[in-house]
Length: 612
Image 1 (tube, rainbow, N blue to C red):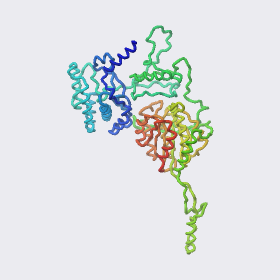
Image 2: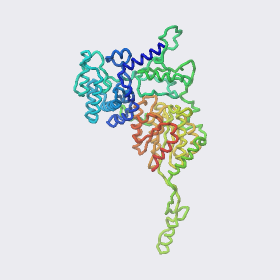
Image 3: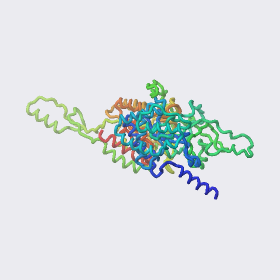
Image 4: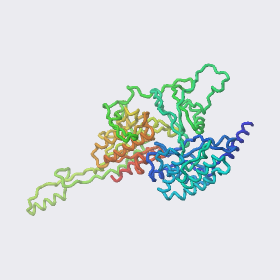
């Protein structure tokens, strides 16, 4: 009974103390696509992704209800860094949804002008607002509505101590006339948050240096669950808790709560607490990370990163050195990556799996319609049949006394030529080991897609190659030969498709550069570089985040300069956040349901090459 009454009291006080308007709330996922388009259309950095902002502590004056409820201690404000445009996960500042949506758009426009050079947040935000209103006059009515609504919510200067009142008047004047106030008066407490401005002191990563990499604990396979918002939590590295400190009697401080220590590197047997851990992580502002190779309980589990040499694919050659783009230094690092080609040694030839035969038959019939019709080539010096029209003209001219040569009297039936080559690069990283449903993993969906893709293209007669890739840092980047351009599609290729399995990480730029080299050598006027992926580029080193995004974009642009046509097909539900920057607005397709990939991939190829 006490717990029930306490829960009711907590909900009541929290609701009374809240200054938000949950009935008019707008969540970031609802507007993320629109905000991203607005940000880039106004001239913002195309490489930035729209993500949720961290909650940060504030020392602003709180009401007595907030002090009782324990609320008002932190705030979500917008900012941008070298990787992301950070916006509040939910905006409920105003009682009208349209105003909360307008605030998202205004913050995106404000961030366009932000170069990160301002030291005084008060002057800097006035400067940003002034430039935004000058550069984009259409935002002025929206800004005026937001300011009017926000000023009605801010505390009245008359009810504040003198120092805080002077500062509040300065902020009000700066909101109404950006650039009109040069100095913000000082006070003991922080100013009341200004949601129309960018964060005064954006949080930064807690650790300046990355933790040393433990070779035995880097590559853990298995499914992972993402938090259901886009907020990025602050992280800090801590020492592993001392779990073996001898006998503990009544020292309750030694008992860790789920908010203090959650074993995230868990085995499949530890999945029972996963939902509880995710719920706790939703409420955390700071997530501490430590390295600990032990299991969550007294059990031993081996997770071998690398297969034994006898069971691994066979390495072909010494590898190829390729460059990589360093976006921070804005230069191409020569010979930075080594790509090794591999061939499945134990892949026995096989037939098409039974559950795909009906789909494959239907696709072969459809794709045969794409193959150019066979036509007669007349006027040949030699051939299997006589060209009757040419022979009659020759005979008539000869009877008339013309001394013409008996050339071009034969004809030959030849197949047409679409003059097209396609290279399919399939992402075989660790993330493909996740489950799509109760019966299939992403790697199983990719395998079925490669089967149907090969069956379909074999019916058209187009030249095509199929390769898979994964990486473990920049050396080596593993490229698996599934079907070369000079190989025919048959049982051997099917056996290699059947043998594919999840690899390591996704150094996408190196794979695209290697694929571009192979495709450039093909004698075709139109060459399609098709990438099949399930997520962002990433690797164990600095390739995570903006570095990998920019290197991949540089590889795509280089492929286009070679006359190739790069195109990406992804099952990543957040692909719209970063793929327009990599491949352009018409250079990718996001497949929402991965189970549809085997059917959609051949149809997409037919659409891309139907006019070839």
